[in-house]
Length: 407
Image (tube, rainbow, N blue to C red):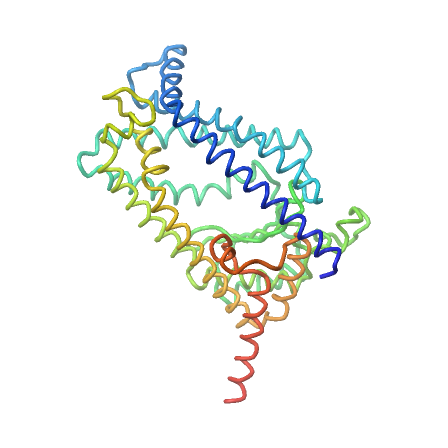
């Protein structure tokens, strides 16, 4: 890492950290306190009732008003978040050379995101309110089952129908890289059905790779920014700052070896199970708390008014906040352990050197700062730091050599 890159990474990390602190203070402290003090949640509920009357819908029907309440809060939330998104994209990321979006692309992205959210939100909120009202004393079990099934359905349809609305996905061209990936998948009995490249370079120069799909239908997605020179055989079309960026075929294969390690070790399945247990506990608490009047009065409602969606919001966001903080820390710790496991799996495939090279290259391309306080990193980073991962790979190399000597 050259001194110039080190300084660029340091400044980028500082800018991101300062912006994160600013966002936390502004949104999570100042705005949240103002909204709670003024009873803004209750005000939005009243606006939803007025909107129902305006469009000649039944303002006494809680399902209808709940859907309109979600719409109102989404509109307000969109405008509340917009200045932060604009600054992050067109100031912070632009300053450090990562933003590739135009103003029109960004605006259309926000509109599509908002519309997709509304389409998905209406049936989910309608079903949630109906289940709570008609599910009896054990409604939280039915609500949990509905939410679990819905999340699995969304996991299935999102990459196929929703993600392509935002980015262009094309099959990876035939060639050595595709052949190597298919051979690796076959060796591990990974049920690969599709292999895509997503044109992430129109949004950002950050890179990634992932797989998705349930059961025996898996798809692998590579960001074009992950590939050397965006996978183009001729770099004459690229801007000067993009030339030479990305990973070689061997390094891409090592990155995929790591990702397939997550699959082989069952990390996705384990996370789904953990999420469902966590959700069940939240719904159990909600089942006991949602009818408690002072919760609603605390956010501005009159005595006796207890909208179900507001109860969900209050219990999940405020009542369970300490529990959620503990769970988030535990999941961060577990995620770091999973990353080490996936690295070890890639090492076992013989990709130790290539994985180390790809981690360094991706860190340089993404201006990742390599030095962090260990306690800060343990609490805030879902992945171990670059130096920690490289040290672990070296340790595995030494252990592997010692094992061979013993044999």
